[in-house]
Picture 1: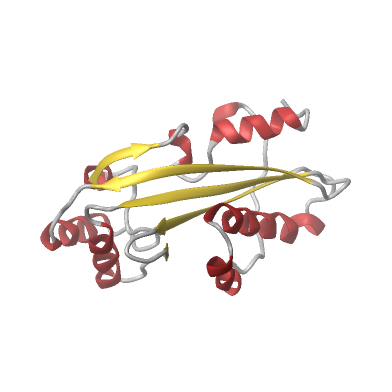
Picture 2: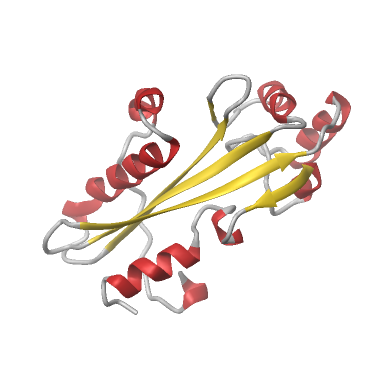
Length: 181
């Protein structure tokens, strides 16, 4: 938000993402990401005292061989396995963004989607990346901001800021629509 010159205060929403993951199988990627972002916005509504709320949630989804939500691996072994499942395949990063009006509770929403194609790599390369960079708290087991970029063959999307989690083009559209820019 600093990058686009909008003053803000940051807050951690008391929304339990894990308790709502069961909804993934029932919804499209876009609907699930928006539902999670809306849950975050709603959970902050009583604590912001008339301030606009901007909430976002990014999900990673591997669609082949079956649709699977990419989670934070937590351990090196799980991270390597997750990377190996994505080697040579395309996954999608879908970010739901919600701008909630403090007075009415109505929301302006947007979705950003990036197609992320990893090149084929072997277990030794995946292990070396995980050992060196330790993205154990990152869904998909990589960080695009570090050497994780070298795992990719191509990235297809219209807003590269959406890869790191907050698509600023979408945020700008929502802020303009709400009269805040």
